[in-house]
Length: 282
Length: 98
Image (cartoon, rainbow over all chains, first blue to last red; front, side):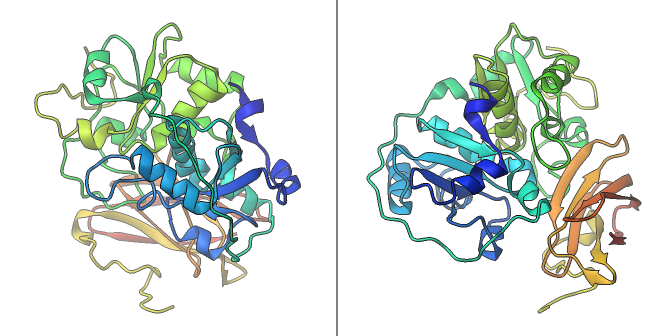
């Protein structure tokens, strides 16, 4: 993988607005952003209702994902281009999700919605209509998804990358600073995890930094490139962004996203937790 | 705007006494800017969060107590940095002019 195959820029999107082989999909943390205005022809996926099981804490299953994409008119052969706000935070999550279910050709719009808006490019509030398809998903690719037991086993053995803000890592905040701080679980981080805030990978305008800059950021933080890596955050979305950087831009082999992340780990009984700015001992 | 309060965004359901809130409005020539992005940087300059402004140009963060910087990005404007101090139980109001 490399940025040639996984990223497109805004000019590319404008040139492919009428390309029937391309489906633009907006995925935002603010699920109402799309309704106020979106790139022409783009459809919307709502991460809270479309991409999460509404009863258990888990993703929609293969059949539900197939029904979702079929109903929205996304086919197996389509080039899916995802974009969203906040440096593509939730778009990167959706990217990882499409890869989890084996979609072949999926890309991110570099800079996402923010860069598009800062460039004063056109947005519309007209929702497109798309013909239904018959989408077939693959079984989940668990080579990119980590579960809690693997994470505990990775302490001191693999790279753990905590991509939350430094204050969340240290235990001074429990959630991102634009959300109320009301979670009940313990604060802190997984011992030995390096803290590389996900946003370090992005420029102010939301585009990804260069490969050289990215490599340097993670190397400086102590990532050992000879080891496998698990990224986590609070609920698994910001860490999708880092997963994208490590796996899809830098081409690292074994990188997993721990979607249970701190809301699961910080509520487990008996697991080690480190507080403060230091990584802590295994 | 329906239900607007000082700061523009409703605080219904939020226990203000437990939060260190930073909120405000982005304006250009006195008019609200609805398509700006406000980033919250911590005391070391590290990105902590980012929100798009509302239809009335408003934004809000639930920060921790301490020193923060708001960096505002908007179309056809240079980024603007504003220092702000947050304290638990206090709503820090900031007007950002671009």
